[in-house]
Each structure stands twice: as structure tokens, then as C-alpha cells.
Amino acid sequence: MGPFRVYPYAAFSAGPDINYMHTDQTNLPFGAGQPPWSAHDWSRFLTEATQNPVVVTYGRARREVIRSKGFWNDPAGRPIELRLSNIFADAPERVREAVGTWLKSGRRAKGACKLLDDWIAETLSALPPQSPPRKRKLALDVAGEHHDLGSLVAELVTESGSPSAEFRTMDFSANGLPEFTWGRRTKSMARRSLHLGSYSETSHRIHIHPVLDQANVPRWFVRYVLFHELLHAFRTANDAPKLPGQRRTPHDRKFREREAQYGDYPRASAWQKARISALIRSASSGKPLGKARRKIFGFEF
Ligand SMILES: [Zn+2]
Figure 1 (spheres, protein in one colour):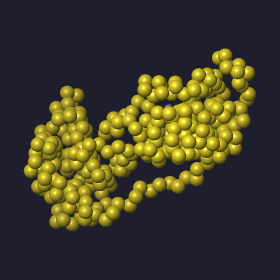
Figure 2: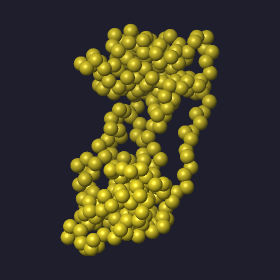
Figure 3: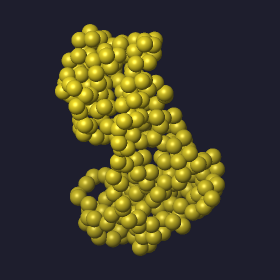
Figure 4: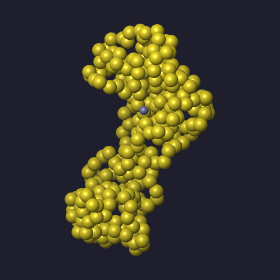
């Protein structure tokens, strides 16, 4: 079998699946006449049933109720990792066996799949609705003191979502425009690097580091940082969905090529190179950034 397998077999879900960040909680009513099975019980059972090491963890997912990762007879000896929805703590024996059969044979095991389908559908429909993940409601700081992110984003992407020059080939309609905000103005620890901006797929939000909200940071530089983060948001929404366990390479060649098409890219990257150390100092000391020399790498500022 391939490295990944998801149940139900309906492709991989795009978008954040925060359920997978919660681990090993079972908060289901039991009482089906048997003690619930722990993840350890499952691991032992499936290892035995498939003759291949399997390590099971529980999650709270209700959509992809089983997700496996790993290779059979992995030459490096790594086990198959199996993420089970915690509804499986209560699975009767025939369902346990069906999981083992499905794990070994996939969709070819028609009988096991049918049994699993029915049991999963029935079990899920009997559950109370899942409480939505708690969202920390953060007050967005869009205006800033020196640079208004709202007007910058409006320049980059017109209000209707139709692309301006910078986003000629970008269509945000898949997920909508992300939210954006200045990051919190807390003094940062002494550090050697600085994230000038970030995009979170989970909250669909762009944070711009508050060190950029000062008089001696040119407005066009903040605009470039916003562009960079919008590009991440765009790619996340429009590129092939991440496979389970796969990591994106955020600044791959395609990203760099697209970024280099940004009209102001040469000037912005020259400014960043010249000023990054001063920005880091400003972020850790809380003192304002000094004026730039008038000329940096041939650019007049
Ligand atoms: Zn980036």
C-alpha cells in the first residue's frame, strides 16, 4: 500500500484540520457492554492482526475517522502510525477486525469496508454535535500608528477581491482574503532573527510584526511584507492540499519566482537586507529605528 491511507477514502481534506492537534482524549459515553479500548489496546491488536508494527493514537476527528501513515515492512523498522477517532474506543469486536482487514487490504476488502461504513455512520449520527473549536477572539489592530494595513491591502487587492496589478494571477475566492493585523506590541526577547510577517492557515490571518510600524520604516516596505504573506495565503488556498504528515516548503522555487514579479521587489529586498539587523535591535530594545543611509545598494531612500 502507499504511504498514506485515509478513511473514509474520500481524498484528503484541504484546509486546517485542527482536530489532529488534540490528542488522546476520550470523552464519549461508554457502556456498550465492554470496557473501552485504549490506544495501547488497539496498537497491540492491530500489530497482531496485520503482522506489522502499528502504533495507534486517538484524536477527535469526525470526518477522517481513520488516518494511517507509514509503510508496510518499513526497511527502517518504523511502525504504521494510525490515528483513530476516539469513537473507536467503543468499537465492538467485529469492527476492530474490520479495521485490521481494511488496514491490510484497503478498499479491496469490500465486506470489511461496508461494515466499517455502517458502524461509523451509525456511531457518528448518535453523537451529540461537536462543540466548535474555541477561537480566541483577538481584537485586530489594522490601523497601526504609522502604517495602516487596511489601505495597503486595499492597494494590493481591490475590495471586491478582484486582483490589482500585484495579484493579477491570484484569485482569493477559494478561501476569501485572510484577516490581517499588526502583531502584539510586546518587547521581544533578544534574538538573532525576526519574523517580519506570518500567515496562519488555522486562523486564516496575517500578522505583521509591530517593529515595522514606525516612522523610519518605509510604507512601501510594509506593503511588500504584506504582499509576501498574501502570497503564502494564496498558495495555501490554491495549491495541492497537503498530504497527512507532509510539510510544505513555503519558500520553494515557485514562490520565489512569483515574489520576484512584485514590482517593488528589488528595492524592498535591498532595504530588508540593509536594515534587518537594525530592525532586530529595535525589536529587542524597543527603541525606534534610526534613519537609513540615503543610498542602499544603489537605491535612494
Ligand atoms: Zn514567507
